[in-house]
Length: 269
Ligand SMILES: [Zn+2]
Image (cartoon, rainbow, N blue to C red; front, side, top):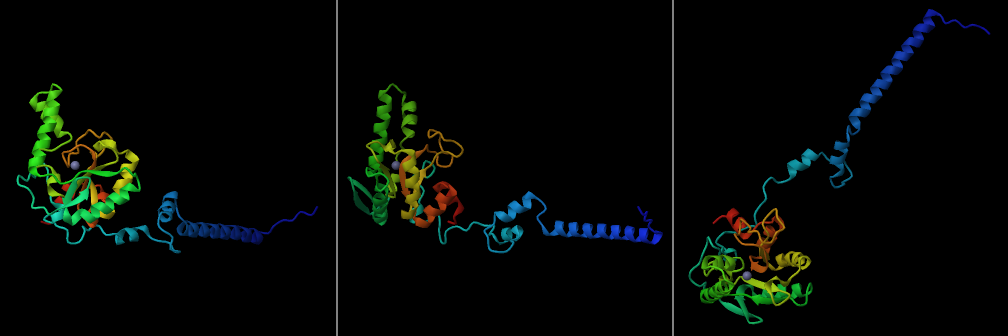
């Protein structure tokens, strides 16, 4: 076999070719690392953005997102449909309400009657037994009701103070119940206030905003226990009590999980 010996010149040529190949490989890998996603994270970020046919810089998208959350246009604390009645905002004289009958012996502020009846019609598509239980209540009637509740509690052996505390769990003293505004309605599918079931309540809540109503006394944040007072409202979970606030306000509050107290605090006077 012939022994080919490579001359020094040929050896130098081989060495140069090897260095050149290395440089080409190195250049290709640098180019690749700058044009392709470097990690799972960058791929995940671009994948989360709606497809528009081109790569979107997420930082640019963030910059376009408004930093403020605009309130419904024109909403003010003094709006008639946002009036606040609670233990901290007692009204010791009757509201000058123009009442309208809405059936089942109940009345509400005439301005909300059409919306309330439309809400009831929609609620009946969820449960045909939904009906009004209690709407407008004057101060005199609320006084009688509250005193009757306390008497009932006393009859089971409670002290006057304990009886009043027990009644406060499901009723409000005169002047602190928003039923006096004519803008609230208790609604249920059975004869007792708490006859609705949880799946129906969430469906009703989703429907209610379309007619301008909110579930006025939601559960306290961070608990599923209905007997815990919501620190914002001072009231336990009442899933029968609906309050009219107007469609725009209702949608805003419900989407953000705000109570009426929290919402009104955000508004100009
Ligand atoms: Zn009520």
